[in-house]
Image (cartoon, rainbow, N blue to C red):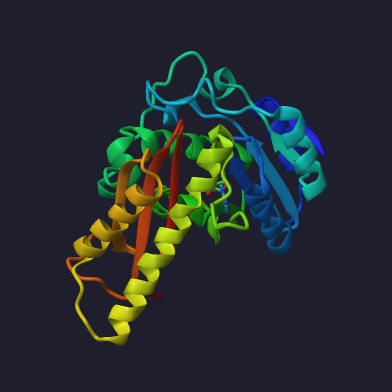
Length: 284
Ligand code: AMP
C-alpha cells in the first residue's frame, strides 16, 4: 500500500493503475462502517483508493475540527488490511494552498436538516469532494447512507459538474444495539453511549407507525409522528438536545404533510459532547 501526501505523488501512482478505481473519501478515525465501504469497493472495482483528510472547510467555527479524533497509525493499518492500494493523506495546506479562492454555493437541499444547523457545511463537503475527484480521478466513489443528505448532495454535485464518477451508496452499519457506527461515538461516556441506542429504537418506532398507517390506510400527519418521536427521545435521554427529527421524501428530501410511502426519518441529536445523526427508510 502506498501513502501519498501530495497531489503530485498521488497523480503519479494513480496514472499507473489500469482498470476500474473505486474511491472511499473519509475523515479518518476509521471504524467498521468505513471498512464496509472499502469491502464494497473491492467487490465492484479493480483498485481501491482511500483518502483520509479532516476537511477544515466543512466545520463551523464552534464545531469539533481541532478535537476531531485523529488516529493515523490505526487508520493506515485498517486500510492495508482492507486491501487499499493507495491512501491519500494530504494536509490542509496541500489541498487548499494559502488561500481558498473558489468557494461553493449549493441550492435548496443544503439549507435543510444538517445544512440548517451547520451553515456552510455542505458547501465545504462539495468543495473538498470536487478537489478529491479532480485529483483521484475515480471511476466509482462510495458513500454511506449514514450521511444520507450528504449522499444526495454528492449525486447532484456529480451530475451538475459532469464528473465522470458513479456514486455508489452503502447502507449504514450499526452496533449490536442499533447505534450507527460513527467516529464521534468515541466522544460518549459509557452512560451516554448506552442511552444513545434510543435513537435507533425511536427510528424503529417511527417505521412501525408508518407501516401501521399504511396497513390501516390512515393518513397520518408527519408532524404528529415527529412530535411523538421527539417526546420519546426526551423521555429516553432527558439530557439530549434535539437538533431535528424530521420525516422527508426519500429522493427529493421535501416535506410532506402526510406520511407517504417513499419517506425517510432523519435525526440529529446532541448527546453529551457528540452530535449524532442517523436516518432510516420508512417505506420503499
Ligand atoms: P466520515 O469519515 O465520517 O466523513 O465518513 C466517511 C464515509 O463513511 C461517508 O461516506 C460516511 O457516510 C461513511 N460512513 C460513516 N459511518 C458509517 C456507517 N456506520 N455505515 C456506513 N457508512 C458509514
